[in-house]
Length: 83
Image (cartoon, rainbow, N blue to C red; front, side, top):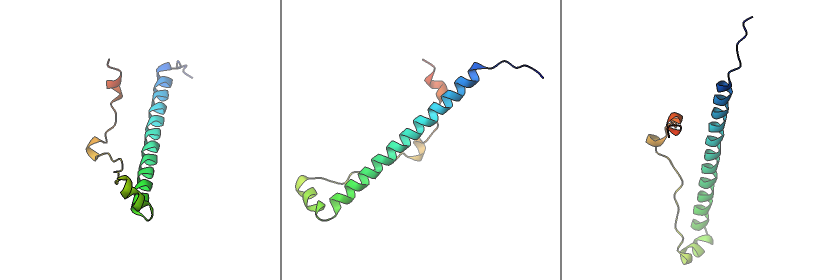
């Protein structure tokens, strides 16, 4: 049986992948929470009696957070380390 050395770079790369996945999951969860809150707000100011109060307070509909397909690209991690 050949004895291969334990590569430290491999564990560092796996840690980086886990961290990137975790950040992506947190951003996605935050986006879902924001959109749910905006949807609740929009529904509240459009239904009775909330629409009466919203009209007096000058509240208007808010738009949900959307990212165009053209901007949905994977992050080039190599660029992050070129400083």
